[in-house]
Length: 115
View 1 (cartoon, rainbow, N blue to C red):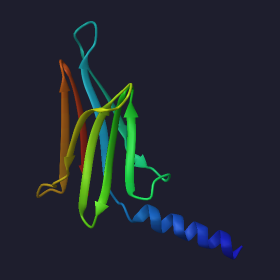
View 2 (cartoon, helix red, strand yellow):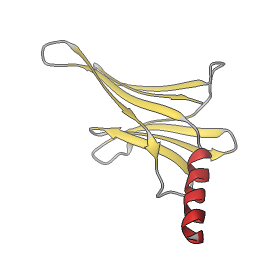
View 3 (cartoon, rainbow, N blue to C red):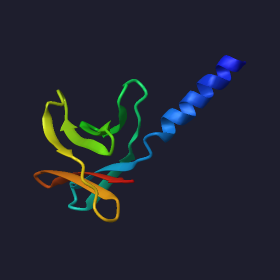
View 4 (spheres, one colour):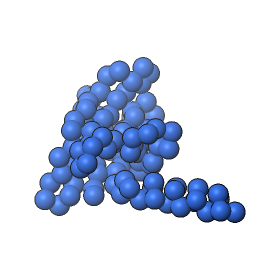
């Protein structure tokens, strides 16, 4: 019982160390010319030692990683091999908001994070 309590406490503390809210989105025009938008909330990746949240929309992979005290890297990469995309160190504005965008023709991919 004591071991289970320790594991639960460790998970709670681990999840609270990286309190970041990020949304990935894809905006595009469908075959009829109507604007469409898909969104996904980035979630904690427990399989890595770094603080990392990630998600994907089709072949677009969104990731936000804390690599040092108050230092972050944001990436949007594209399949099938995920070697092409955009990466940036994250600098938050006065409203604690960060945005990274990638444009491919008429399709816009965005990663928006808030502290």
